[in-house]
Image (tube, rainbow over all chains, first blue to last red; front, top):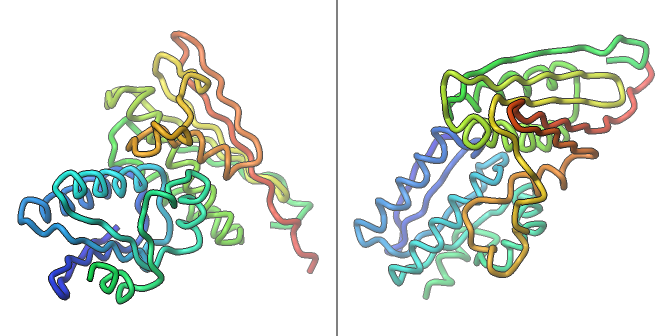
Length: 112
Length: 147
């Protein structure tokens, strides 16, 4: 997995690419989310358009980001959830806990 | 592969180091892709096998790099069979709390075997004290197209 990020309208947008399966991927994404919190960047969108698939390790990282941001009065939103990841979110019922949007722009508007 | 081809077998052994899960994924995906398996099935199998290997490394072998994880693959025309074996103390899948229970929804772990069962056609967990855990999964493949 490769990870980049940018900022737009005061929101940090994380752009992971590839597969999120554990090992080094887990540390990279987890650490970046927690770095945002340290820097008081508490509005975060994860753009999943470039993620081929993830396993439960990836889901765990998303949950960690969600709960840590919430505990710090922040918000995490998902954008461009692919069909494969949407299927996993649905069968695990996690679709009910994440705020998922069809595009980054829509996710950004939802913060306003 | 065609219906008349003999099943192909592959094996990989990795030490229990978390980063090695990517090696297992590369090994598996490249062989399935070479065999012409469709990408949807490759993704399902890759998710399932990386789940099982992560469990074997982190829980079964407790991250001990001296303990190995063995992955065996049998690829026939109509079915894919995979075994993952660790050297740990055994694992009871029925002891895992339901990840769908309201109180567990925000737990960061505990969904692996649930997801494997959803994605694969059969899942058998064979575990016993002192002999490690072997997880056997199968996935039906589309019938080969006649040429």
